[in-house]
Length: 315
Ligand SMILES: [Fe+2]
Image (tube, rainbow, N blue to C red; front, side, top):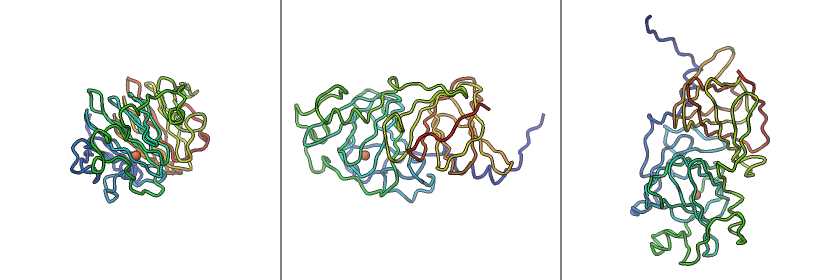
């Protein structure tokens, strides 16, 4: 048997240009200028689609955003992010570790502890911060919608507030409440609508042979921007080509997944491993298949908020 290379098509080049490889990327420790000079705030960002909350919009290693951005954030134990707000929705999906997220209003804070595969959608204009109290560093995926990327408004930044107050997101001692979906405080009730526990989400078995858990979308957290789902794709399961009228992105969390594109009879595919991503533009026929022996877990973001329009067919 001889190894030979097949000539690459324009479609193959385009698919590669829409692929974000974890090993081709680097974490940027200086993505957030407001953290500079405050070692307790340090965090690293790896950009896949757009710049997220970073002003580094000129980075040409990241894919152009349409309706959402996607990045990874890495934060070590003991570090935190100061309480701030913005005019866009922003989701935190925990990949590794446990993360405390606090929401603040009028000096009171509700804190939730999120574990792997849990998610929070930070509502517009709500003061929010986060902190790593656990023993492991946190890796999470952050997505924001790209409408009006204004800089965040800081509510309790350590340059203006005492370090203890900034670390507690603005709560004086005794003013922090635990997350409680049955709690009576209005901030507890509000946050309960935006927190997703992976284990509490229904598992939907598609006829095509894979699972979906809907995090954001009709029937789950309502949003007017994007849908977000977690897919479980067993070994040797795949779907036939489908088309959306918006972009979508697959970020593999565990296992491997092969993504394919089709155009005028030309076909190309790429295999993704953990923390690899493909963004598929609107209108492109695409499909996925797990050629591996183990199941794949995949974070799936779709650039519209409406009901699902795709009916998956087993390949
Ligand atoms: Fe934020």
